[in-house]
Image (cartoon, rainbow, N blue to C red; front, top):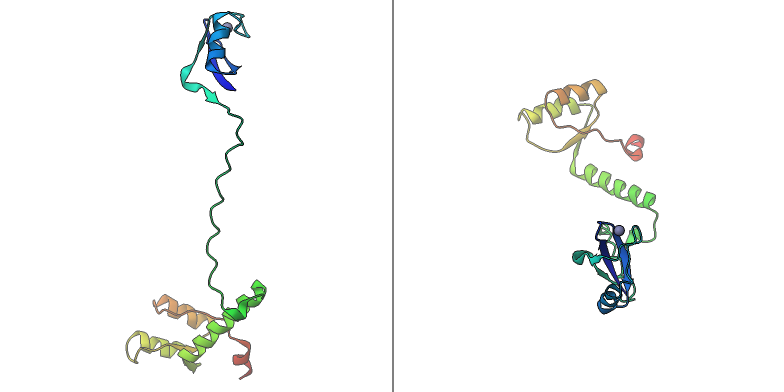
Length: 156
Ligand SMILES: [Zn+2]
């Protein structure tokens, strides 16, 4: 079937279904085509808007975009629930942090300051600071980050 957009002499626009363009021409010739609004038999095709329906199945919808790649998982994470994985990653991060930083304990604010002002060799340190000390370091532009202390550190 072919759908033609049609226009009558008065300007009414409507659709007509035909077996072929010859079918359309034939119906028009025999004045079988009339405008559903005004009954005019003066019908013209609107060429640009014709559509063809060959009875073919609807084109498939475009495939959904691929899901973003999952972050690489190590085998020991397989089958674990996301919460357990998050805890594992957090624990590893803390392990790394603890092995790569020097614990200066209560001297942290003073030591952070000495390192920042290059009175001490640059190194990664960890330790304790009160909220006030932390804020003072931040105010001075000294890069410090607050971390929750892992439980075993509290036990030590
Ligand atoms: Zn009309």
